[in-house]
Length: 214
Image (cartoon, rainbow, N blue to C red; front, side, top):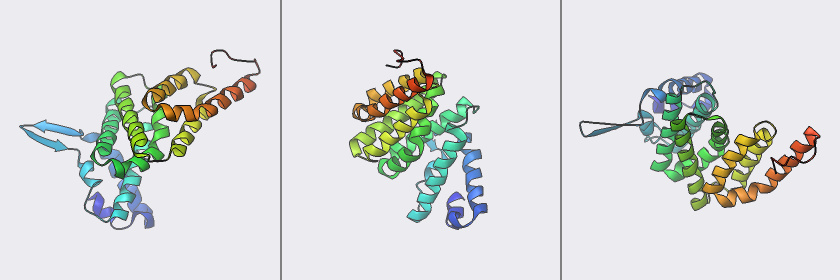
């Protein structure tokens, strides 16, 4: 059904776009990513939808809308059920594993920053592990494939540091340590931005050097 609606032209009809967003929003968490019963494996229906046999422009538009829904209604929502968030994270990982090159650039560009910000706040261990697994997959594939460009990834780290250095420095450095383990060259390239953010934070506070930050 989603593919059929997509073929009608989401970019030209706000109502159709809203319908597809609503379907993704309300049904994403209602199915497990994978179920094995009586030697039969059943997958989440969106896996087929997002790799459907429709024209590539339609598929690309559906994927874009899907990632926007995940970003806005799952990763960025702080009151979401951990179980719902776990399904979303697992589904993203499965999509990336199934067809890395189809998903790597668009997922990295649209969801890397929200994923890093999510990791700043996560305490529940299962959800944190799934989020870290997804981050690991994204960064390792980005390093191996060279997609997206290093500049795009550094820009997202720069944005993360700029937003959170002043208020969540402890959590921020914890996430940056994870990035250092998963993709050391990326963090090394982003270090000048981290240094500048530390300096700006010290200047705003007006208390001199902060040895905790340094």
